[in-house]
Length: 287
Ligand SMILES: [Zn+2]
Image (cartoon, protein in one colour):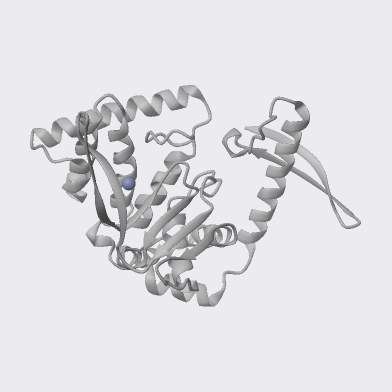
């Protein structure tokens, strides 16, 4: 954590501000070596945090609350404290992210609020920078078609058009969703399929610029510990699946492990399997 105290001017007023900021939340400019650059980054972070506190403290619009209550079934299952925290996060999320309709789809408050409520579930009870690599959410009405080139064996690639419900990427700055799947995921938590949680779990994973199933952690010791625990647990899950032994994920959905194992087999030297467990498991466990 970096502790900072400074004074901000607001018209003729001067306001003293102090706070502690996690290192991972500070934007680093390209010339980040100098003290002036660090001070600049800290002040920008303070301003951003102040703006977000104000957004979270705003009364939540009644029309939006009706939309959350109507479309997002898990909302009723949250405690009062979690609901209040979630509604605050939704206000920040909607103020900072841009939505664009694709394929003639019109973006409405219903679309924005339903997506935001599900995405922000992943932000509860943690320090958050609100998916910092994500600027725009693109929404198609239903399943959309995309060109895909994928490896199906060593030196063998397959090209073709595939139907998708959602996607995001580490350097895309955007996230794509099919509204039909978004609504279905929000309305039926029991089927353990939620494309919003899945794609936004990828965005959490990208916060440390790696996309390896490891979230942004402050120290190298924490990163190492996370990697070791995930590798060990993933290996245990694969062994249990191959041995037909039921696991927690089996009880939720056997498809999780199958998807993860499939990815891991395609790329055995990487830890992409654990990344898949992180994103796919998130969409199952939170539902
Ligand atoms: Zn994915």
